[in-house]
View 1: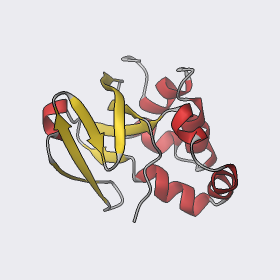
View 2: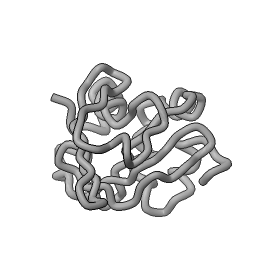
View 3: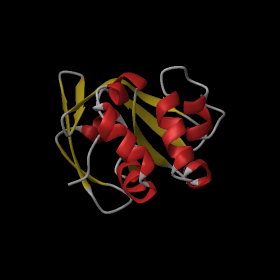
Length: 135
């Protein structure tokens, strides 16, 4: 993953293909791949499968809403696990994420980080077990 930009890296990971497809549908691939030094909280395919099918279809069919949801998973700067100790992060759309890092278990809002601090060419990635929903 280290040599590839974030969306390209996600698309090549068998557990992150739904996220990559959603980004493509929202026309955000180039935007995220060209962004400099970001952190992306990427829901796994399993996380997307927890979203009821009708809601997921609705989301994927509404480009504006999909863009808002996907941007809610992105913050500026490469965040380390230490940066994710209890606090808040502002998303690129101005939303707010609440982070906690207790005993090595990192949560973002109510999603658990299942794998984290992964470096791509332009981002730090944390894989999460839920799709985050903006307020």
